[in-house]
Picture 1 (cartoon, helix red, strand yellow):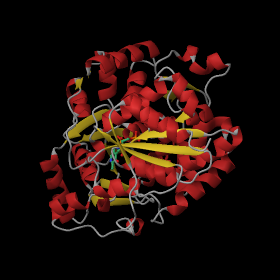
Picture 2 (cartoon, rainbow, N blue to C red; picture 1 turned 30 degrees about the vertical axis):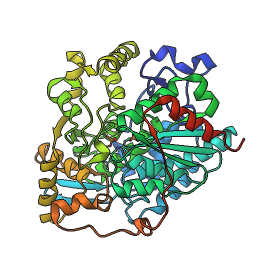
Picture 3 (tube, rainbow, N blue to C red; picture 1 turned 180 degrees about the horizontal axis):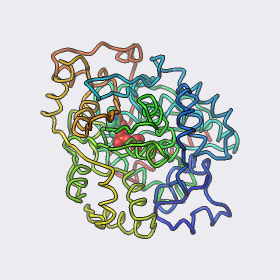
Picture 4 (cartoon, protein in one colour; picture 1 turned 120 degrees about the vertical axis):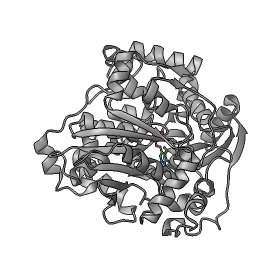
Length: 473
Ligand SMILES: Cc1ncc(COP(=O)(O)O)c(C=O)c1O
Ligand SMILES: N[C@@H](CCOP(=O)(O)O)C(=O)O
C-alpha cells in the first residue's frame, strides 16, 4: 500500500523525490505530507461480502489487526499487528471493548469510551503507541510528537506515549476551554518525555500552529516532528476498524447500516465513510455539530465559511477548521491534487469555501448534517437520560443527528465518543445527577498539575518545542 498527498497528483507522489513512494511507516512517522497536504492511500482496500461475513466471527483485536493490515501492507506482518492490537485493547474497561447499546428502537450507541482516558481517542491512540514503538525501533529513529487538542486527543496521546523511549510529546490545548477533567488528565501526567502547553487561543490556533511547524522543513527535521492528530493517516486506519466491527454485529454485509458521528476535526466520520469505501453497505452518514456548525452549513448550503469558535458544552467539538474534510474534498474532486490544493489555500486565505457543484453533490449523496446549540444539547441529554441512557454532550449530539437519519430496517450506529464522567458539570446541568466516577479517574484530583502557558505565537511555541526536544542532548 502506497500513499500520496491530497495536494499533489498521484503520479508526483511526494516521496518520489526520495526515491520511493510513501509507505505506511513513512506516513505513520511523517504525519503530514511535506507539501502541507494530508496523506491518503493510493486506493481503498476492498472487502468482499464473503470476507466480511468471515470477519463476523473475529473478536475486536483480531478484526482491528486485519483492518490495519490492509493499510500497512508489507510494512508490518499480520501476526505482529495481532500482538499489538491484543496489547492495545487489553486496558479497556469493558469485556466487549466496543459494546453496542440500543438506546431506542433502531438507534444504537457504539461505546468507544471504555479506554484509559474515557474517550474514543483511546481506540486509535493505544494502537498508535504500539505502532510508533515498533517503527522507531525498526528504523532506529526518534521523534518529537506535537499534537493539538480540544480536550480528548491530548490526554489519550499522553497516556499512550508517556515514558516511551525515543519519543518526546508536546500537547497544545486551548487555555480554559477544556473541561476540568480533560485538563487534569493532561496536566497531571508527570513523565519526563511530556510537555503540556496551554495556548491563549482556541483549538484552531493550536492546530494551525502544528501545521505551520510541519510547513517549516528545517524545524521539522531539527526536532524530527511527528503527529498523532487525525491528520496522521494511521489514526484513521485504526478508527475504521470499529465501524466495520459494529456494522457486522448488526447484520452487514447482508443488510445496510447507517452511522452518526458527533464531529469536530472530521476524523471519526471520515473513518466511518472509509468503512463504506471499503465495501461495508452504509446507507447514511450523519454528521452532528454543536453551535460551531460550519460542517452542517456546508452540508445544507455548500457554505463553509469560518466564524470565531464559540465555546460550548461539547468543547471537544469547538472547531471551525475540520482538518480531515480535506481528504473527503480530495476524493470528491476526483483525486485532483491541484484542485484540492487551490481550494484549501483559498480557504486558508479567505476563511470561506464553496466546492464545485458536482463535488458537493457527491459529498451530500453520502452525508447529512445536524447541529445543536447548548440548549438543544441539554434537552437531548435529559431526554436520553429519562429513557435510561446517560450520554455526554458530544454523544447526545450524535444521537440526535442519528435520529434524524433513521430509516425503517436500517440500524443507526451512533459513535458514543466520551464517557459522561468526563463532562460531569454538563451532565449535572442536564439531568440533576452527577455521573458515577469510573476507576480510570481515581486519584485525578490529588495529582499535581504541570503546564506551560504561552500566547498563540508560533515563534514562542516553536522555541518551547525545540528546547524541550533537545533537553537531553
Ligand atoms: C468526545 C468527542 N466527540 C467528538 C469529537 C469529534 O471527533 P472528530 O474530531 O474526529 O470529528 C471529539 C474530538 O475529536 C471528541 O473528543
Ligand atoms: N476533538 C479533538 C480535536 C483533535 O482531533 P483529532 O482527532 O484530529 O486528534 C480533541 O479532543 O482534541
